[in-house]
Amino acid sequence: MTRHARHDASCINIDRSGMREDMMIVFGSPSRYVQGPGALRQLGTELARIADTAILVLDPLIQDKHGESIDASCRAAGVAARQLRFSGECTPAEVERLAAEAGEPAVVAAAGGGKCIDAGKALANRNGAIVVTIPTIASTDAPTSHNYVMYDENHRMIAVEKLKNNPALVVVDTAVIAQAPKKLFVAGIGDAIGKIYETEACYAAGGINVFGAGSSFSAVELGRACHRLLLAEAVAALTAIDAGVPSAALERVVEATVLMSGLAFESGGLSISHSMTRGLTALKPYADALHGFQVAYANLVQIRLEGRPEAEIRALATFYGDVGLPRSLTELASPPDADAMEHIAQRTMTAPHIRHFPRDLTAAEIREAMQWVEAAFAEQAT
Image 1 (cartoon, helix red, strand yellow):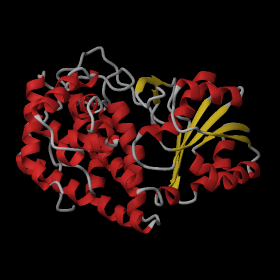
Image 2 (cartoon, rainbow, N blue to C red):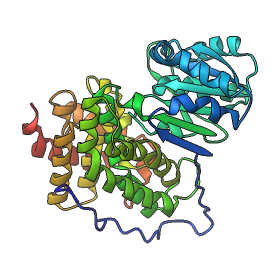
Image 3 (cartoon, helix red, strand yellow):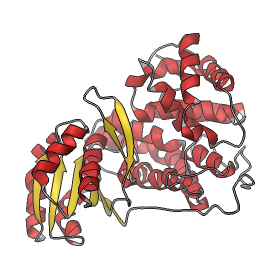
Image 4 (cartoon, rainbow, N blue to C red):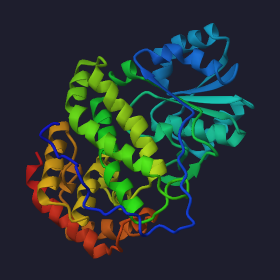
């Protein structure tokens, strides 16, 4: 164990007294998850397990760098795969454009960042195709999820849609991820490190998970394991990112941020931290911060609201400093004024996940927790 926060016991009682007796749990996951250096070279073999034809929606950078090797892998495996170039934004118009080119594919595989993968999911959902995700950055846990986000032409989120099933296959090439921007990798750690708090809170409150069912205790345990692994391995994994070469620590951290975190949030449920993104994305300059950075900051607010010991909160903030995550709104983007805090708190209260907490909260309590976090950590901003 590192010198960072231990999580031996929660401040939340998770006896689940708030859960309805008639509520069933649902645990969802991809059918197959493949991870390792060079996984893209095995893509054809993996796709051949599903179908002999596929549409590949590729981020331009990935197509330019890996398009030929992907095509060769598919040909060698007997998969007729046609590549479509993603435009950069997952809008209804972009999905319609891709659909006009794609025809009626049996499989849609999307390789790139979050918006490219969302476009692939949207295209597949439109045509009833099987979904394959190929994340080339590890900035969120969305690749394992059946959710996807749609945006308008001005880059504003307009809807969160759902597939009928989770992706059939997730392929993660850690040699590619090791060469992606470090900031995106750190954002993935921020998105994943607090799943322990959100799944525990949702479970304790008898809340619902992303499938609209009761929280799975297996998902809670995944959130805890993800947290422990990141505390132990994240700093070493960042050394591998600096070198641009996968390592054992990087492999474990990618598994935590993509697979473990993804399964935890979908089947365990979300709480205050992700509710706060409703407020943070509504106000510039905080709206411009990466999702994982927003969530990392919000974790500190949530565990303050839980009443955890100050030493535990400060230990998590120390870990944040070691890996480059924001410990305050000041570090996230800019020093807040009272109006900004009030606006964020009020918008946070409109999120559906706000109910996944063992007690009712008010905007005033959220604002007070934000003020405590700012007072405790803003002076550390550089």
